[in-house]
Image (cartoon, rainbow, N blue to C red; front, side, top):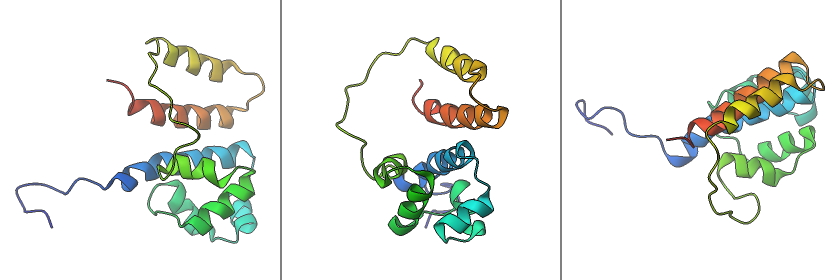
Length: 136
């Protein structure tokens, strides 16, 4: 328990990953053109719980992640990597990314004619959530 003058305790590492994981799940659901209710039916998980997972309010169990992955046509490993519980493939050495690459990536998303406006917004949100913690 934190003392009154030291402020709240820092979040555990897995808690920090819940936001990006939820954003990834939401973006993938939107890209699959599934409503929350449709996703709940496919996963046999309540739409209220799925909503909380997407908002980063709950740490989903492996069973829930498997159901979500199956509904989205993804592997459980992809979702586990987004949760920070495993790495997707071999660890790669850090690379230097030009500072203007974020702008060019966002521009590519904004101008891709294959995406709907909702898909663009979802991708931009997920992309930004991943790069915010990587800069600086």
